[in-house]
Image 1 (spheres, one colour):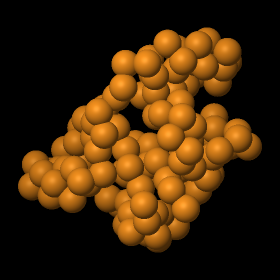
Image 2 (cartoon, one colour; image 1 turned 180 degrees about the vertical axis):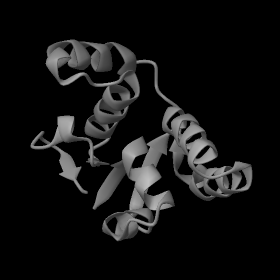
Image 3 (cartoon, rainbow, N blue to C red; image 1 turned 135 degrees about the horizontal axis):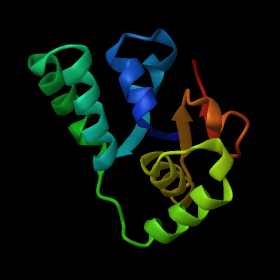
Length: 120
């Protein structure tokens, strides 16, 4: 199975959440934008050394955002405006769908959506 790890999933991995353990060893990817959010989160929650460690650990998973994803993601966000989805969430979800990957998250806004592995 191929997966896309959103920032929620990456952060949970850094916190040692066992429910996300198997995803990091799978065929998983994320976007550089998610890595920026992850670095901010780990720097805030832990320290620079920990932030650097996880940044390097997950660097092999990162992909650049293709420009053609942007209009699709913004339209998706607009269609789901009541869910209060972030731009990063929408970009990641559309990237995952376009690349036939399961979007892994614990964000309640995505619960029950097609192509989502909702994990807590």
